[in-house]
Length: 367
Image 1 (cartoon, rainbow, N blue to C red):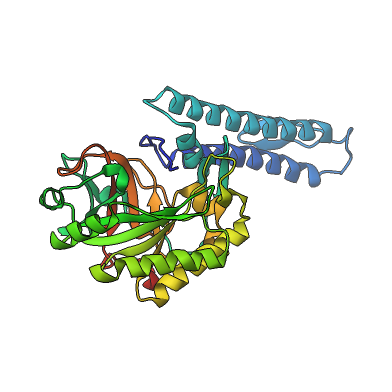
Image 2 (cartoon, one colour; image 1 turned 180 degrees about the vertical axis):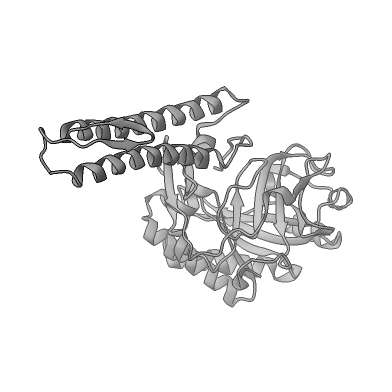
């Protein structure tokens, strides 16, 4: 459903060091070669019998064209060998470090792409300069003793603790949840069956909305969609708008987009283009109704199942379980854990950083 790999803190300058080292060596070899070629070209142009004495790096030698060509080829080969050696050494260092992951290594090396797993392999999505960038700095995230994470800029806390729940959490003591410091909750409103296509309302949604409301917890809802037509999207949005009307929700109405392992899952048959159109239709309908639309997903669903570049005016609720946020673009909510513990909830619960719109940088449409 969501990326669960653990990211290790890595040195983002490692690839730069490799490149600089290789470039430095290559520059030396190039200078040598150019000096030799300059001397040779100013000689009598006779390839084998005529030679000229030159001083290259303080060494007095004579060279034929064949010797120059051999030296250039040797320099090039040494440069390639050194590059391969340094990259191998870097990979070895990463592999010998504590709890490494191949994804971490790839992401360190390919900084111009979003690297994400799926279908038993890794994908590379080139980062676009035309999409609003992630404005959040890694060293400004702080985690307290309960595992609750916040974005703190100077003395200002620019996020709130958010949970997301469904019937899987059962009955919730919302007063205890509020007392634990939770300020927002995104509650599952329902889902569409992946086989039957039937819409099902979450059995706890109304109680959860009411419990959160009376305890001053900001609420939003999400719907797990398996819609395959625009008419089915309309059904889902109509259900959601009717459901939330009595509760005056302040948070988002989100569409949950993810791939199911079941071969019979109806949504899996959609093309990337068709799914993008359906998600856009959902978001536009929600926005027209006066609510904040949002798209839930991980890197695979956002970049592989959807054409994300065509949906960037809608905020993202991004699922990525790690100590460090790995997402190049602006976002509204970061789901960082599925194993959180909160008073008033039995068992694990998802934890989220919900960013406040006062943070400098987010696109205007996301506020």
